[in-house]
Image 1: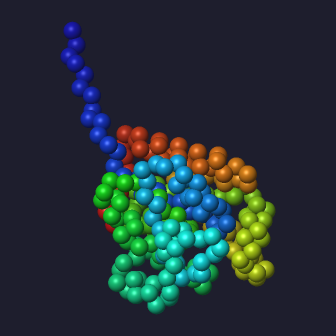
Image 2: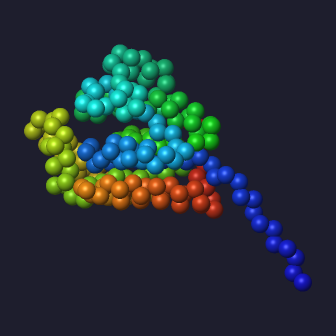
Image 3: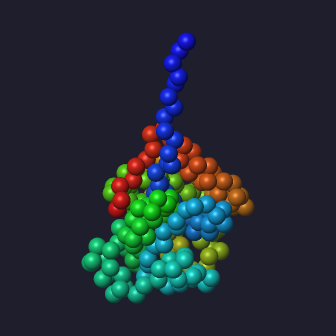
Length: 209
């Protein structure tokens, strides 16, 4: 008669830091809004920015909107996990938006540009990184045009930058194609990726930042 097999302990999985990144107009913000509706026990980190608020955006929910002097003071005090100047505007992740929820055991979802994702990866290599991309450059061009917030020169600059960012997809763990008219499919893929990562035998252990 063989001895009883002792099962490994099945405690709660450690919290994840999930980085959603991709080119401008790839639909990151729309995806985050849809992910919120799933009502998972996630904390959605809010990025600070000096760019003007767009129609329909809510301060403290879509972004933390700051004037340049306030933003730079936060930067000098090391209150930002990362910061960068993108298209002449400052963007940065307040440190407490990520650190405090992780300490509390919550998964953190962070929407950030490709440059910022590289910085987060360098200081938190165990972060789960997901690259959000359009199905084609034509889709990306169409979204920029529909947004109506860029003139022709700005749109061309963003398209050129998007081409460079798309070439960096190999730096990420996963890629999700956000096709026009198929938002639910992209949301389900991200949800499934996070669920699978929570079941890893060797979990990602993100150091408190």
